[in-house]
Image (cartoon, rainbow, N blue to C red; front, side):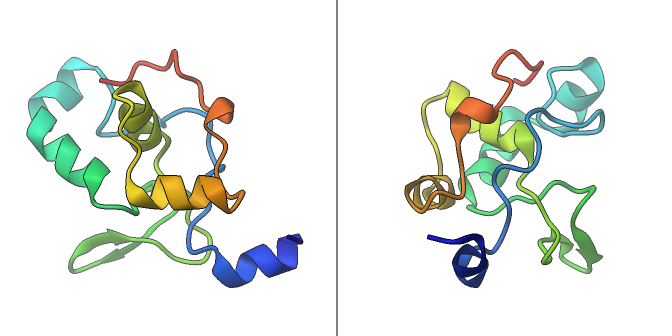
Length: 110
């Protein structure tokens, strides 16, 4: 499938960042552990598309993916560490939009 054909199907880039940004809610830092419970992170991670807040648009509902959005690397790593990729990760991988081997699995993610 060519890149132009992929753009017709792809909603969000799943190969955008190999590791989370410094403000990622999935980081294993005291600040993020106190701000986000594991249960809340699971809600984010199981939801399907979870864009990196640095590439998303802000709306009344929170951050939403746009045409320039990339998936949150922290969410991808969080799910991969648990061997629980969500449906969008699995579909994106099958279509060639996502390659988990590009993630930094040593990143400080819960």
